[in-house]
Length: 117
Length: 114
Image 1 (cartoon, chains in turn purple, red):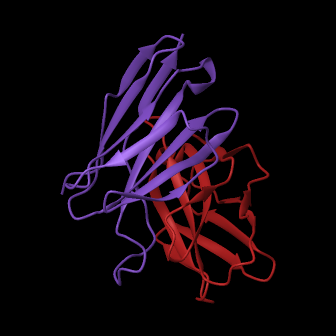
Image 2 (cartoon, one colour; image 1 turned 60 degrees about the horizontal axis):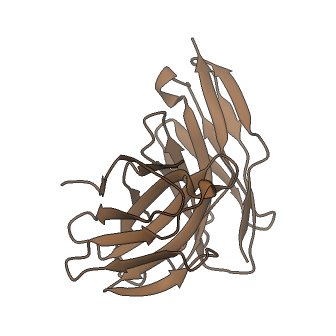
Image 3 (cartoon, chains in turn blue, cyan; image 1 turned 120 degrees about the vertical axis):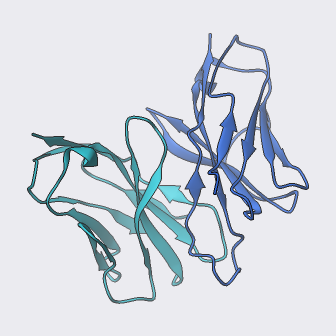
């Protein structure tokens, strides 16, 4: 069974640009969550999508957005990039809460390393 | 709001010895999960062990076990017979039932020395 796949793995952007990151969840997983990981702030929750709807959102500005497609693949977008957006962006998939076999576990991808210059 | 605190930024242990990583959390919820995730230098986070709050019995997975003290809101991880491959960042995490918003501690960097 293929794991969570994130693309691209590495990318470099300049301030003011925008970026789109992609995440393909494990087959059968319909919930996708995004996290930002930085040395200073650690792992911070961005948002979660289920059935193409954003269900939870962390405390990030509106420049951070996401969406989910009917095949459960998800993208996140960051507009007007700032230096502080440099981070590892992690995607995780899981069974939706309430599904009987859901153990609560999130399955993570290897991340997309974004550098903003 | 739920918070997770890991008070040990770095730890080291000799190969084959035992080490305990600490974690405390704060929540008013009664139904939740607790997790320990491992992030090796290659970056992918993998689950080490999980605990459901309603279960009094501490979870164990081979060399990994937890000491779950619900009243004290404490959730420590014990690694027995440490191996070089255990070298990684370890994150303690909390998640409410019926919610996929997982909250992480700051992490503990564990180094296993030969």
